[in-house]
Length: 429
Image (cartoon, rainbow, N blue to C red; front, side, top):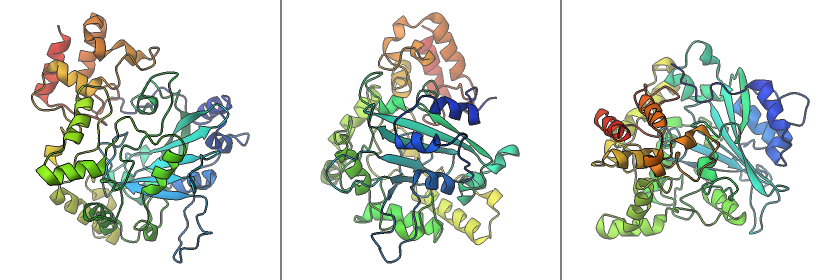
């Protein structure tokens, strides 16, 4: 079974040469392509140093320290980490500062969460007036013998790399790690966008200690990690961090209007008044219809019992009372009842067509690049899909979830046996 979503693509120096030969005009390409060979990177710290995004301790709040980098973290993702990011395995963002209301001439953002050997990068290309998205796939030392949860979900993943590959968005467009499915939602030729669905205060799922529920996210992170640095961020800088840094970067550079913005204040007000939110229900309806990426969960999606068990296990690894190899999977902290509302599971009661629309249509539609192989399985026009293509989809629905060809991709969705059969029955028509 092949479980590598990037299997079959060029790697290492060959892929680096292909990216650099495209002569992109962004600051990430400039740094990676400055020499005659790929830069030597053996850790996340090396990558951050290459990009000029190193975060230094700053106990006295010296404004001259970390002047070239801002940071924030969140505890729920609607992107590649939808099933893995949580307050313990937080998604960290390091970015170019945006100190005033004017657009940045050049800017970059790095995103990383422990759990998977991937780093997401984006930078603007001023000459081409577009965004360039990149993915760094690095190789932890454990890969040769098999990686445990402790290898991937602790600080061990941030160093000891034995190699890496830099991919640009065009190279990975026909994989489950495609950047442009979310960041070029209008399809080829449309404007590429930075996404931050919770763009405005009070940022329900971000590290924002100004409110009790978001303070809890920060406290859970710190309870697990103690004084440990995370993604190169010193522990002392986690509590002072704010999502406003990323909000300002987006707003100043033309991304202040999001396609399906999660209006936290309005949603929270509706929840407080009646226990439900019509605003959030409308966002979910768009995801249910396969028209938008899923919104963040309406409230806090975490199971406190699961989360406390994960915190305790991580503390035990840090203290040495639990061997790192015995660390349980820290990703399993969601409420079971939240999975359908997060679009990880289908909405209960859907028929086969509804399951295919909610689970598959955002990646299989008429808007995406029609030269990609997955465009042949267009859920928007299912009646016109060929018998051969439907049979291929059925075969992929029956693959083990870890297989890179399995449908739907396990990093985003899961189906019960009954739901899977409903989807297959629909495709048999």
